Length: 119
Image 1 (tube, rainbow, N blue to C red):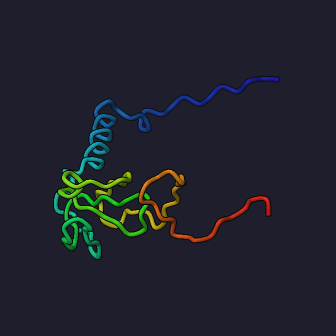
Image 2: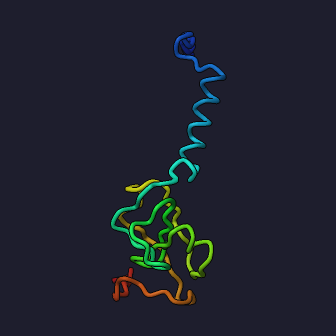
Image 3: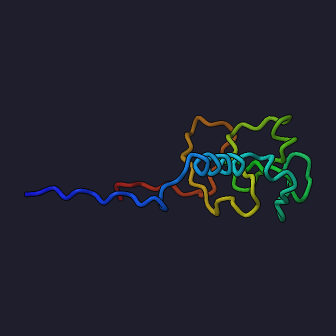
């Protein structure tokens, strides 16, 4: 049995250090909320101050079915659950599946059905 040697990489397909750094910096900029300072999350109202639309970063509750904060309310108001930080409009997930514990305060499941996996 013989082991085939891999083909050498052609020069035109290699990335230079500058290209790698540029790609890395572009990725960081995309993740930075300052990259979208005036992003409008249309049809989304802040449950803390009622501003509509939310401009800038949107914070969507990972437990409550329809609960959002603007950046100002997320910084200054209390909420018992973790948030998803949504920087770009239209990138919020359509569905979120969260495992909740009976001990979690102020959590109401959206489904009033207990499922028995043994049935």
